[in-house]
Image (cartoon, rainbow, N blue to C red):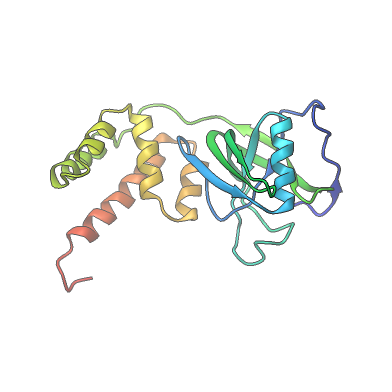
Length: 217
């Protein structure tokens, strides 16, 4: 995506609600997640300035491959998490530490390079997934088991089990889904059941590995 060059709208100009600056990285921003980032490359400093001058959102595009990741037109997955800028800590040399918070998901329709070297995308917003989480009882039972076996994390597990089903699922997804592939499956799914099944499967695998007798690994 994005072989041509386009001019970024000037700060203060009306921005289409379907336009997002892209920050391609080998990660996936999931629902409920906060993401601290260090912005140092000139093109991404320009991207940050543009986002701040407009609606404060950045498309966290996931790189399709680590090969050629630094190329300006590196391939990305079409579905991405949209991050809202919560805070910016600028440094004297132009670098910045920023904090993003998941604000939704979108699908990239097209993208192109700006004159400043960052990518602007036309996107369509995707509806958020809501509804019952069929795996919630199993997830809460696992949290109770973990709380019973860990004195240091007992309070954290107990508090997590008390959250609403969807919020609990989001926290566990961020903990259990460690590969970009799994995280993209979760983000791209329109089914709460499918999302719950994925998290349950990965947590069950990790629990089984933890309980595996020595010498059988």
